Length: 494
Image 1 (cartoon, rainbow, N blue to C red):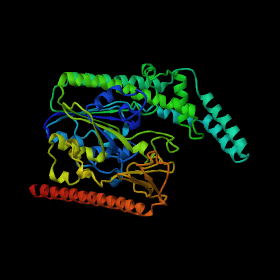
Image 2 (image 1 turned 30 degrees about the vertical axis):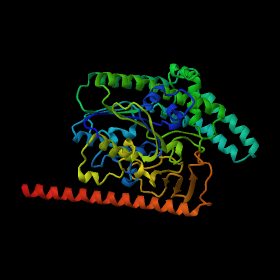
Image 3 (image 1 turned 180 degrees about the vertical axis):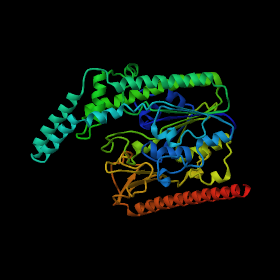
């Protein structure tokens, strides 16, 4: 269809689809992204293969499931999206702002000529964990637990609220918290570096990947972006909300949750503003001959299903991601309702710009190109299912997992079709079935009412799992045979 054009991939960590204007959000969080969407393909049903970064990114960069490899790293993969670009004569540049799960330590630098990593913008968030686990807090939390075991329910509520208030009131001060200063300093450096490199760059064709962490918590958007959306919170308020968010002892009030979401939206507005600057530079220097893909690795939960952040659950607020694809010189919006998977992006990009993929590598790619949708052909999409997966620890998260060995049975799988979505919790042997045509919020579990649908989708999950694992084992055996043969050849030649 197209050949040797420049490609820009933007991934915005934690970006919810339904918080963008082009997907119907009421607030003006994303004027630039909306303007890009008005002349792009906008996918309504794009799904991530996982609910957080380590689960999802292998799908984007290797077109394979994370859990098949039984580890979060892609270091052992024979190929990546970047290596395929490199083999086709592209100069590959990456900016990671910096998520450790997509860093050079996890193998994501492979294939890039230039891989710029910045100090983790979320590193300061760990300060909350440190602060909230210091001796003073632990002693207060111990008081609460002791109290819970001795007194009636009503008194528990009164006293626990009093002690929670004591924890946060004691730990806070009026100074601007360090994480706000650090995050604002680092993101300024991050976007300035991108602009500087683009201004100086002349090698073409190029593949540019930018991974932004601004929308990830802690949320502390600059004042200008807050004012753009009609609020202006003090550093004290931002700090209080950030600390409150990380406490799992009590559910956040609706009033605080609204403020937290406002801050999240302010971060989207900040990224939108920066992207406008970057694309202005790109287009003024390289013209309109650019393929642009804007997406997210996963969304963010705001008590949609009783959790905050992005733990290992498979509801749509986390895995139904934004996907906007702008073809060179495209001038109108095309809204796509067909199902696509994040895994499909690698082969789709290759199809669109004519990237050659070696036959042995092509066999290992699990995703299927949806380039047919970019020319208006939807016939192949009928009956398609997409899949998502996640391993989890005792807190439904990943912090208690061994990132190099995900072999346990505590895993969740989802199969998503045109109408039905099944979530299978293998660890607890629990099934949830949702009718996405009539229950977009996934509030009504219909598993008991439709056992045949559950059986069908469960079987499809097993088949997909077995097929991907089988292909993975064949791939590994092939690699071993190749290594043995190379060793023999080396021995014979010497």
